[in-house]
Image 1 (cartoon, rainbow, N blue to C red):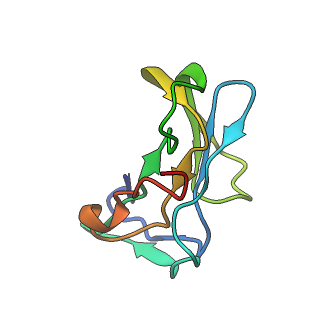
Image 2 (cartoon, rainbow, N blue to C red):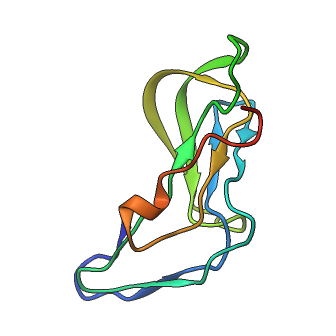
Length: 111
């Protein structure tokens, strides 16, 4: 979820957010076939992006306890956030959306 601070307007790029796991940097691939529109944040506007860390059916994967998040691929201000222990295998991420329901990633193509 991304939201501008009071009195600030900013634009999330028409690009996938960066979502990577652990120091190894397993980066999430696209969950949607094309990049969405840029999203302007101001006032009460909130943008959402969803990530699915495991899109495979098997027990394979690597366990991580943090995710690295950036608003786009060129974002120099990425954050590392604790997420508890999760298994990661072929992760996917959605574009930025103004509806939380639209940001829920489907399972991917390996099902």
